[in-house]
Image (cartoon, rainbow, N blue to C red; front, side, top):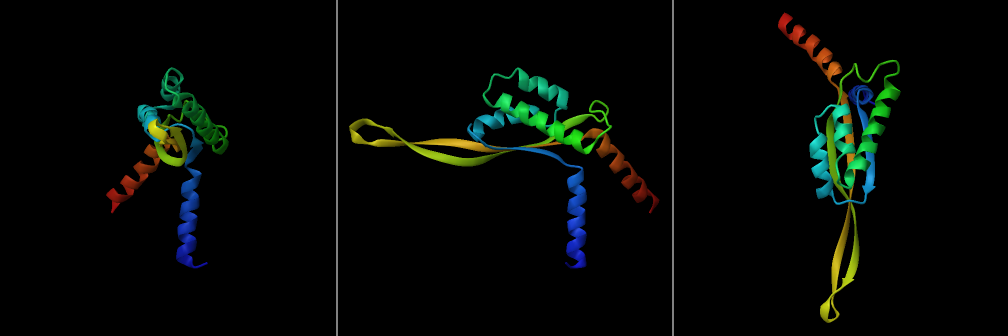
Amino acid sequence: MGRRKKNSADARKEAQKTLYVAKLRNNPTSPRKTRLVADLIRGVDVEKALGILQYNPRESAPKMRKLLLSAIANWQAKNEGRRMEDSQLYVKQIMVDEGRTMKRMRTAPQGRGYRIRKRSNHITMIIGSRIDETTTTEPAQTEEENK
């Protein structure tokens, strides 16, 4: 492995240590309906997002709440000994992508058949800490000011 390739691989590995990701694959709800719920919690603190998802009547809300709890558990696994309340966790990024589409036929008048598309989606949720971001940006600013 060359030097440049190894350096970029090490940089990616270090970036992965600060990412706390949870993924839900082949969720049997259309992406359009799920994005409505995802937009409600994007950028919101974790405690508030859990409350929003608990009382939202949409079908995707309980699944997304479970996914958020999984992302919090991933954060706790990488940060043993730190409290969740002190680090001010928030939903940094949430993406709802289209999954596989199952095609079915429904009977229609005059011997025809209409195609029904049963859509699914993939949800990727990334949570971050507001404290980690402020501490990493402050030293970089002071180094630039010294130059």
